[in-house]
Image (cartoon, rainbow, N blue to C red; front, side, top):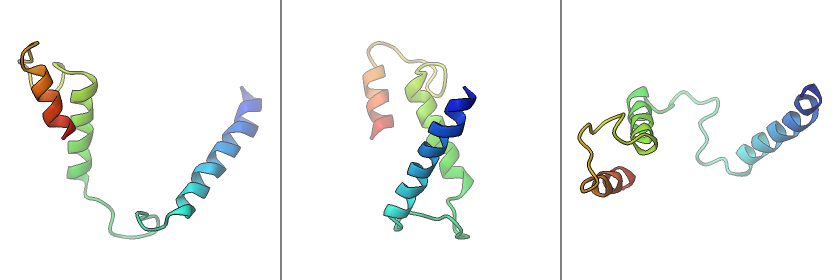
Length: 75
C-alpha cells in the first residue's frame, strides 16, 4: 500500500490539481466569497435522501409515492 501511496496517489493528486487549472471560471480557491454553509448542508441532505430513501427526509415513502419524491429531489 505504501508503494501506491507514493506513486499513484501523487499522480492522481497532480491530475486533480491540473484539472482545477484547466477551467478557472468556477473556482473559488484563495477567494473570500465561498458558498455559505446552509446551501451545502441542504444539498448533502438531499443526497442522503436519494441514497437512503425512507431513512432521511420524507418518512412515509411508499411504492406509490417514491418515484414522485425522487423525481422532485433530482429536479
